[in-house]
Image (cartoon, rainbow, N blue to C red; front, side):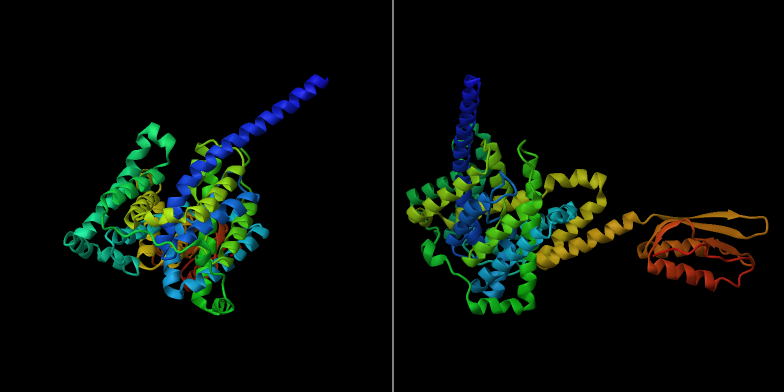
Length: 500
């Protein structure tokens, strides 16, 4: 009996050591991916690079410790880059901390109210369209960064200015050099995973940035480097005046956009990560609270907003992580690196980070899924493309709202199936039964069918008892149609009352 109990304890210790070993290795892999991505996202967002690292550290250590998802990794995400850039441009860097902090508190409130599960009801087409729109704007903006040029403010201007950018780049040897560094970085990102031995040693983002940095340094190429000012210098807690800006309508809209988009991206990422492993499933409400707590702290530090990041999360699972220790340790490594080796950031070429983000933006565009989606669900493709186009033409928040409205209209259209059955009697009266679900979207077709039943000198008996649902517009229109034709020879009736 004693031997059996000792054997059980020994096995438990062995499993714990195995988990720790696996988590330690996975944390290093995620750390090596997170550093270049965090720096690149900060540069693309128009903020100091240290703020991207602060968000990665908070996402690893704080959010990593909280319950929700065990293997999902949080940090700054490409999906919020466009929105952050617009917010900083419109309201200034000083307002960023207040916006992120308020968005975090809103996320916590949504989690406490158990609204996390409702994010699963958001149309997948809207989410894919949102990511595609972000990808298009991100790629367009980073093409300017590749050439060392300043990008226009809005998405359409970015796309419209690409031809002029090409002309200016061809005329400038320095710009051509920077473009070559960025394109080479993207090429390494694409090709590196195909070299299995190398991919097992170094993650593709780190390998690409390291090679670009080595080439630029060795050849002394005239390419702009990342500017580093120190971690403590970059941290800017919100001021009292910053909180007063929450009374502005535009700032409140940005807070709502941050909270909703970050939450949606996080919970869709959680669903994807859960499919990659056999461990505990994500508690959506707890994960929303964890993300909100992380964003609240990030806002208090004036840093970038965070979401769960599918690239880091998938790498964490694929590297063999077993518990949340891996994501906490990855945050610790980021803190140690930023504190002890800040000079390493200053030798990274900006063009290399732009190449990383061009690749990240391209991966946000669901190109392969469009053909099978068009074949089976054309309405979904219309919503996806409309959301993407709206984001490019306006901004992220308005584009997503347009996409959501289109998805709701599409669902209402598809759920309303109404038709008219007719039976002609010997006395010339046409009995018409309206069947199904009727809403205002189907009203023009329904009235056309009823008008087609009328014959001079004959009556129509209208029966609405077969309607399972009719909204107010349909109910009022059908009653009005019946009253309008009541003087026609024969009988006109609306049947039993229909509840809207």
